Amino acid sequence: MNNQEIVERLSNTFGPSGFERDVAAAVREIVEPYVDEIRSDSLGNVLVTKRGSSERKLMIDAHMDEIGFMVSFIEESGFLRFSTIGGWDARIIPSHRMTIRTDDGDDVHGVVGTLPPHLLSAEERVRPYRLDELFIDIGASDAAAVRDLGIRIGSPAVIHYPFQQLQGDMVTGKALDDRAGCAVLLATLAALAEETPELTVVGAFTVREEVGLIGAGTAAFQVEPDLALVLEGTIGADMPGVAPTRQVTRIGAGPAITVADGSQIVKPELVTFLTGIADATGIPWHYKLPPFGGTDGGVIQRSRAGVRSASVSIPCRYIHSPFSVMRMSDFDQTVALTTEFARRGHELIESA
View (cartoon, rainbow, N blue to C red):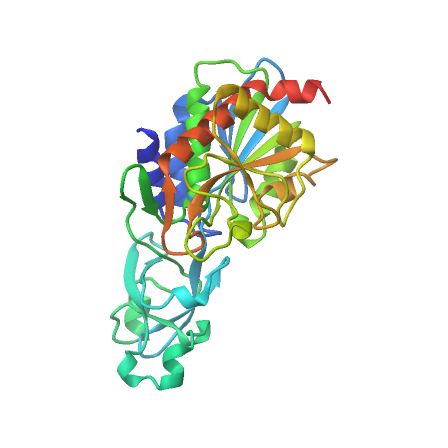
């Protein structure tokens, strides 16, 4: 598979926080030819090792989970109430197509029901729906029919539309935060497959980032890295109505390098090292504007006695929504930067 095909496969895979099994299976299948060891831990993190010429370790992290939903109540009439998994804006949830996963692994489709404007008062037409007003209609006649389908309280769900190519190298799909990061990590490991880097590279495909950076914390504790790099699909905000001071990253400007966000302040020497690699190799890049967002780096840097951790992101418009938009050239440039960082990361450790 080429890079876009990997992004498409991961984007289309079901995997909200706590239910990453299908994503993990896809990752294991794709990465197997490129690494020396693959294992999963008790939470579901997939940890893969590409052995280097030394025992010193670079951990490259990307989280597998996406924001989603969970069935919270089944009405006797067959409608489903739901709660969110991760950071949704309730204003954009109504009327979307929902996919619910049963315990048997089957998918049941429905729609987030809303009243037509004919039944709304003038005040209701301009007021956003509250989450507790929304429900999923799967076409079931009653609660028994819902249960017969294998849906229960706790069944996970996502808003799901297929990955598509737009104009040029622009693509759109769900969960590019952070399936784009997972795909960058896979492409990096593929690029290193025929090499023996100085550092042993541990790819950490982690779980439950969207509900508290949970998987990355336990992964870093196990790996005990000497250095870490976090890959993320982040806030692309180059769009009408957004002031330049709030355009966190920009589509088409290459990978975004974090100096600080809501979870961490990156040590300046790591930022300088990354920008220096990019400049030396002709990779376009830009800073991710602080202090927006947060990544697994916030918990990795606090693991054990502390880990020097940096973050590189692929700009994606409309994250934490049913669709995101990304430019594949930004993706490819992020792969190039990440690969070169893996090759040269020992220089940073040796200069400390």
